[in-house]
Image (cartoon, rainbow, N blue to C red):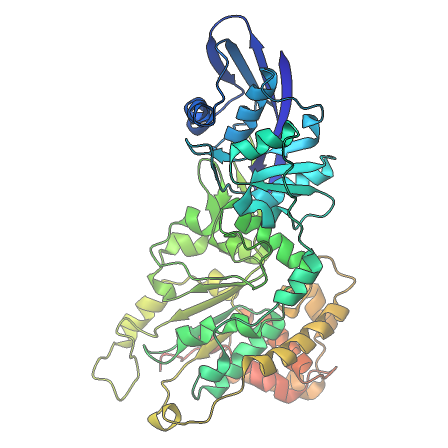
Length: 511
């Protein structure tokens, strides 16, 4: 008897429906075709043990299973349940007339219980698009799949629940999630708050500007000055994710199995990889491509602590994704594209010892050592970082103050108001939502300076020997400062403040 059941495979962050054809005929043998990997090929042992332990059995006949389309590689143990139900249906141990309405996925343990799988959200979205009515999967993944409306999600703990469901002995209760209600109920603030930071008022202001315009930022300062503490609190002042952003972010994390049965992600991601990371782990890839850290930071923050300690080639592969906000990974047989629209926050010491030009520290570095240290970061990468700010240690008087600083909630209100102004400004431009994304054409249109502002910028560039690359960055940042002040025009004081945030472009920064 020939039976068709349906599963799903994920490539990039999109799913493809897999048709599993099971044919049982006279003879003996178990043949699995359709480009399965080792984990899929081993499924016969797991299926056999799971069925035996639940008083069912593999038929002692010739079983041929084809997983179509046959030219797509099938990976992982998530097809165990699909194959098992196909075999039971083809051998008449399951009686079902509507099995073609189901997508079935799950990894089997030897006792018949189900283990969670990856990529459930893209699978559920594809199932709905292709008109499937039901999705059977492990209970631990049910909440994530139930985000998708108009698809009945049936979470199960054991293969017996699926068998009983199809034999009409006991129907599985569907998992229901009101996505919008859950999303707006769970929008909350991260555990880190700017009110914990003592002093550093100028740096907090700088972080507020970076958050308001989506600008990449680098913090330069000695150890213990609070760079990491400030960076960890940046997500707490970013505007809440929209439902569309939350779905997009959850899809990426679902593919790598990082959703942890929480359903929709409500917080903007904050990723902080160690400096020993490889370029494949950072941007994504591998023999069978998976998203990297830059994609896991999509709609959130990527924090690179001690930037010069990262391998130079690792930092260089970020240049194109920072500009294009997506990364394309090509292989001989296929190409996948992952979105990676993130805010880059980097920190670094000003010298190998960390205490360059600090009169209170006995550890010193020569200007030559410092220049060699800074040269580990290429000019083109710095070109993509809008704000450079020096962080100085906090004096004891500030550290011992009882008074708390301004909370993240208050700062976030100003940032959100500024982002709303930018959303209106760029409503006619596709893929441009905030100031950091402006290209030269938009800068010329939206960053018009008065004669006084032009004169100030000209004087600053000549006196401070600012490079040409600093010019557009200063205009973008000054546009954000004006938006925070709810000003249509860019005033001279906005330009003056933006000029402060280009430390590494100053010719004489070493002196």
